[in-house]
Length: 461
Ligand code: ADQ
Image (cartoon, rainbow, N blue to C red; front, side):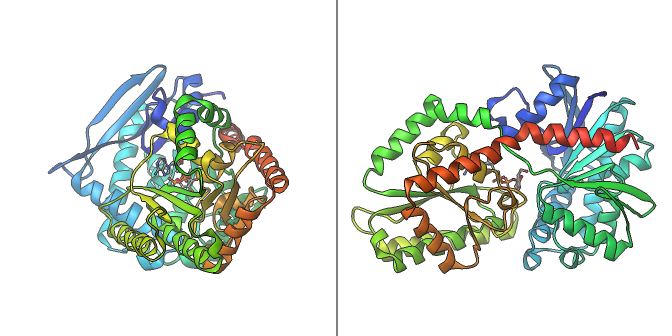
């Protein structure tokens, strides 16, 4: 890469810390190589602060500079809770019913993006390459350009881009999509997302298709491509064989020696389809009673965005559903569902995955879904478990050897789980091998390198 890398995302992680996770580590690698800058919200909310104002903090993490800005309560509530997580997140996940189009939010979203641009601009160098992440920051490049920023700027959307008619329900849809044309490159998770982008700009904005993913509209040209995000396969394999994961695996095997484990691990988000999954498990018990007393579903759901109403609703729904199933089917020595509302230490996740005969990854809609890839990597290649994957996860475009399901179809999902539980070892091995090859070929390092390479080329037109 010719210039310094500048990463901008809503939250910033110290890449030196182990708990930072795959994305922070992968971006941290690239930032370290170029002595880069990572910029975002500090996580601090200032009560009674002035809207559009926030203190800038800088900190050195090895050769990487971490620069973060505080948000006042009003900006946090409208930019983060209101517009990002109350409008963009639900609509981009096709949930118009959950969107709260309160007119007040958009001004806070713009104000926070303008402030980020204002604070970032003096920190930039002429040959920097800027990489903006996710739906919180869609208008950031347009704000930077309005302030005279000429550097190459790329954007990656971690969540799905919905079809044009769904997008058009957002009152500011045209402004949002126009904002994307201030970037040199817009990266999306899947080919389906790229098609939605192309259809939107052609039908709603009369864009000209210049070929090779390039579109001209709103007086600018942008390049759009799919860059399916991967995981750090080496790091996750090492984690799988480290002490904490091995201990977890052994404890699970001991505890559930007479059972077959099914596992789900997600943030407790309505996009993840957890109640649908639990209903499919109930259907499995009802329809294939041989699984009663033998199959146990462990569902770990970490608390997330609890001050947004829809998240309280899903929590209550799940608690009552799990309670009802355990009440109806449970025995003195067997509970069908173990529901745990907590974040599990990252080091233990591979051990849990490896102990599960079936990995249930059944979102109603998901940009990619990294749990699907983690589950596969954590398996014992000699005796692997089976991944049951929603066709509506971005990962389904790559992971074709999983058992693909429609999570809205409770009966169909139950049948797939039964098929997974009965699958021969040879078939499990064959599928696992093919999945591993795909996950390895497009890991997180491939994702980062490919995006940055295309961004450099896109900028040199
Ligand atoms: P998320 O919606 O957060 O990410 P996902 O891709 O599944 O979803 O990543 C979640 C990560 O958190 C995984 O590494 C997983 O192991 C971990 N995790 C989840 N629940 C946990 C729990 N209870 N305890 C411990 N760890 C837990 C968004 C998009 C996705 C996209 C990613 C990356 O919504 O579609 O794949 O960004 O682009």
